[in-house]
Image 1 (cartoon, one colour):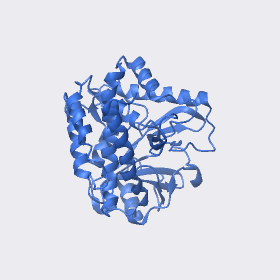
Image 2: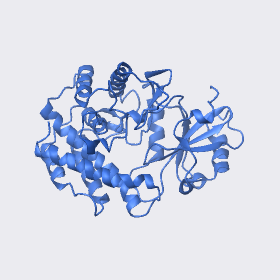
Image 3: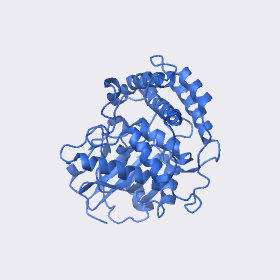
Image 4: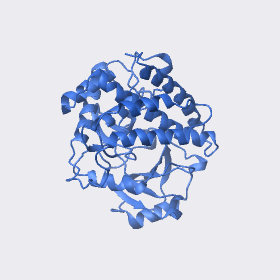
Length: 365
């Protein structure tokens, strides 16, 4: 166990929002009694909240010699089956020893009276998470940017190569038919979360239903694999040291996982309105294009697709993104959260929906 850095060295950690507050002493007491290793957990920790993410809430608990990260579900209406803390905890525990980038699990609490919701705790991985803007104090040359992209694709390929049987994860998914289940599931979620100020996207849903391919394989997939869910080594920005946010991980089609990643991959030559929805630093000089990422993934795994075949995955990834954004925006629109950061998700849905309409019409290269 290493001594944690000074408080200002933990990027994105800020004061806890009033609506997300909890009884710190109650949580600290519970952790001392239930942690796999309670060393360094004496007393009341300093608590900060991570700014990244808009689904599950993530907090930093800091003791003098140890940092833990705690994840819990948000308040307000949520999709059935979402925000399952126990599932996240079990999945990462199972992946330990089979995938080198999962945080070490510390404890899982099902007693909602402790924190106001089910939660789990894990060790903090020392490093930084790149956000929509690359940190100004971390140099990144075009050569490093390219190397980081290549390494990112390698890590995704490594995850897809994990043996679900060996990791004890065979019960994680439902087997064949993943593509069809995802198209139907995200269509339902979008319809259920739609607010009056966004498109219905029924043309996109119909196109996906009519053009879906068969599953190419069944493997462990992350389902939210993007730069701001990676932890990088500050001493070597091309080195990935952790993969975070396993809320949506399952057994499924690896090309669908790649499609989800590419939905967030806004590149430098994308139209101006699409640049407005960028949430990761994929536009910087040296970063691979989406086509280059897909080609590199195919080279590493042998799972190649033609541009016309990839069109389905691109449409799927972007439509799924609108459904995720809309579920978040729904909570803001109907006053279930006062977090003003969620207000931007409605306009984002409109922008991505315009992109989807162009792709479905076949007018975009």
